[in-house]
Image (cartoon, rainbow, N blue to C red; front, side, top):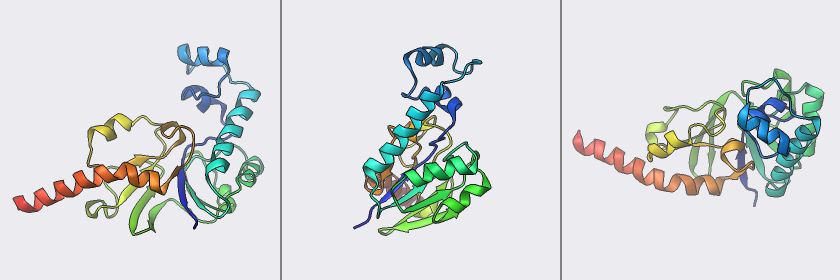
Length: 208
């Protein structure tokens, strides 16, 4: 049986994001610079970019089977089309779908099975609203639809934790240990949130 997976914000080929987010693929020297001058006028090495890209693609291929379905929720690459095509060809999963992000070129659309700016998908009875950007209200949010997003590189995790009935999750690599997350993992994350959400909604009805 095929499985469903999500990821976002790979930024393949993008040296600056590696230092801005202090991703673990930096060399020892680069890691020290990223700790003290994350926005400084220095560049990560080509070797670091290759190490970063290889690790993220390997993490996808280790988890996502050829017959599974993968959604990349924006910011796949920061490279010209030809380079980005080679990145896509290295992912063994045949059905890779795409939510456009702010760094993605229009030409990337040709590389994916399905491409949207935002939208609802349904899987195993669950409605999931996909948008590269984090939202606090979305289609069917009041009826229990989930929202998966990227873009913020883990910076909203504290806000999400502070609102335990918010049915939203950052699926970007910086928030998910640099690997894709399965539908089952998302469902496990959402389970206590759904309990809080439906209790809150029931209380609204009682007070009406």
